[in-house]
Amino acid sequence: MTETDSTLARFAAVIGKQHVLTRTSETAAYLREWRGQFAGRARAVLRPGSTREVAEVVAICADQGLKIVPQSGNTGLVGGAVPQSDRQQVLLSLSRLNRIRALDAANDSMTVEAGCVLADLQQAAADAGRFFPLSLGAEGSCQIGGNLATNAGGLNVLRYGNTRDLVLGLEVVLADGSVWSALRGLRKDNRGYDLKQLFVGSEGTLGIITAAVLKLFPPLRQRYTALLALDDPASGLALARRLRADSGDNLTACELFPRFAMDIAVRHIDGCRDPFESPQPWYLLVELSSPAGGDWLESALQSALAQALDAGEIRDAVVASSLREAGDFWRIRENIPEAQTREGASIKHDISVAVSRIPELLARASRAVHRAEPALRICAFGHIGDGNLHFNLSQPTGADGAHFMTRQAEFNRMIHDIVDDMDGSFAAEHGIGRLKRDELVQRASSQETGMMRVIKQALDPQGLFNPGAVIADAQSDSS
Image (cartoon, rainbow, N blue to C red):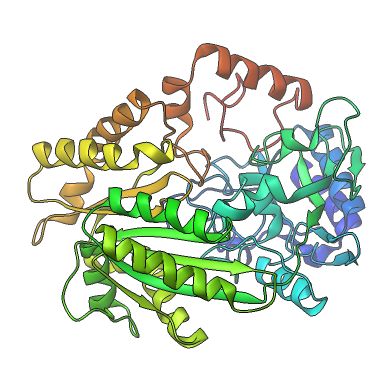
C-alpha cells in the first residue's frame, strides 16, 4: 500500500469510505470556484459529518503534513475556498455538518453547524417566531460556515451589522486537531480577549469553524419598500439620513444603482422592468422595517418622501403596494451582477469609504477611468447606507472582452489608489482569498501584515490551513 493509499484509508476509517472522494467526476465541483476563475487539485475531497470527525481529519493531516482547504457552499468571489494546484492538499467540505443543534427563542439565539444553508436558518428562525437578518444574493446555497469565515455583509448591514455582529459563540477545530468550544449564548462576556472574532473573517486560515451561536431578533411586523429616482448619489445620502431620522432608525436597507444598471437588468433578466415612465439618472432602493405593530412606519415613509420631493432630494418615488411588487424591485438590484455578466466582460471592485464620502469616490473614480478609456461603461452600485460600493467597469460596446480584461491590473491600481487616498478599503465584503492576497501585502502597513503573520504562526504553526489565502507565510509563498 502506498503512502497515499494509507492516508486515504485513515481518512476513510474516520469519516467513511463513501465520504473520501477521489474520482474526478466526484471532486470537480468542489475544486473549481463557481465563476470558474480559480481551480486546483487535491489529493481528496473529504466530507466529515461531525465536529469529532473534522478534528480527527485535521489531526491526520497534521501528522502527514497535508494542507487543508476548508469549504462551505463554494459561493465565494475571491478564490478563498478552492485549493491551489498542489496534490499535497485536501479539500474539507463542511456541507454534512448541517444540523441546527438548538434554538432558544427566549434567549434570541440558535446554535447551528457550519454546513447549514443560510436560507434554511432564516426559515428555522421564522418557524420559531424569530428573525435572522443575514441576507445575501446567494442565500439559497451559501452556508453559514463560509459566511462566518468571510464575515459576509449583504443587504441588511445598515441595521444589523456584518456577520461578526451576529455571532455570540463559536466552536472551532484548531490546527493540532483539538476543539475549542465556546458555544455560549452570552451577550456580555469580558473574560479576556474576544477569541471568536479572530476566526470570524479569517477565511479558514486560523481554524475550521464547525458551529456557532447566532443572534436572533423579533419578527418583522411592518416592512415597506420603495424605489426612488435621484439626480445624483449625494441626493441619496441626504434621503438616507432623512429616512433614518424620520423612521426612528428603522431604515433596514439602502441600495444605490445607476441608469446603466437598470438598463442591463431590464435587457437581460426576465421579469425586470423600470417602474418609472421615463429614464432616471440614479435609483435608490430603500426598505424600512420594524418588529413593532401598527402602520406608523408607512406614515413615516410617506411623510419623509413628501419632504424629500419638496427639498429636491428625489425626482419621483414608487412605494411597493404588495410583497410581489417589493420583490420586483429587489429582483432588479439582486440581478445586476448577472445582467452585467450577460452584457460582456467586466472588471469588478468591492470597495468602501466613509458613507459621507461616497459622492466624492464616485466622482473621482469615474473621472479617472474615463480618462483611461472614455468608452467604458461604469456600473457602480451597492450598499450606500454602509459605504460599500461595487465599482464595476463594463467593456465598451462592441469591444473585445478578452482585450478589455487585459487592463484589469491597470484599472484595479487606479481605483484602489483613490480608495487608499480616501482612507477606504479595497476589500469591503468579499474578503481577500487568493485573488487579493498580493494586494493586501502591497497596501496594508507592514505593522498590520506583521501582526497577521504573528497570529497565523501562533494558531497554525505548520501552515496547514488554507495555504496561500489571505496572508502568505513562508511555506505558501512559493505555492
